[in-house]
Length: 277
Image (cartoon, rainbow, N blue to C red; front, side):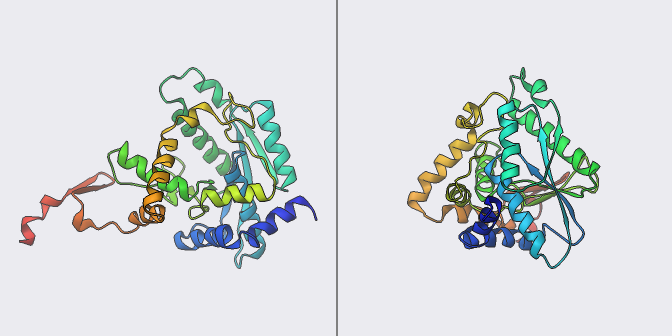
């Protein structure tokens, strides 16, 4: 049996409960894929985006409504080793990628103030632009359940706000375009297990200054790593802590919120506090 068939079969067989059903649940819960969509599945070279590509491929085969998918790789200035790893994995897994070049790393190499943030913003813009040029109305990213939890905590601890990573968003700069996250309910530990089971090797970091099999230094020192460690600590106390954090963003009680904002509008509980007395 060819490798790509084995890999795809493992998603719907061995990891049916932990990956495939959660993938489908996220799509159905948040209406991420709809009839007639043309989706640019964004491939970074990591485990998450490659799993997403295989899930989308299988969904196309069994979906009861038609949608299209393009598999888009934006090369922001990868090292030859990293670029070749992406190409080789795409061939191994039978993912028909299209590569677009954008020398983003050249622009951020001398940036001292949060270069990773700037790089991510620039890459997002190029992804939208290239996806739109391909006739797509959505881009799909490989963010997973753990990313959602970590973002929620980052917003509280470092952003002084209650907020999370949304399952889908309208683009503000590219009218008619949406961003979707189909792995929203899939846990990272299960993605890692899927990778090990299939003996696959993906990029840990696509940064120009790391090799294909290295963990990037800035990732190791990142705030996200702090959140992972914090969650790991609280999991020892409450094994369901991730689910509790996840559901807290689905069950916001406005009666117990001091204030909130929606767009340009802000609200403070004192605005109608005395009217209720």
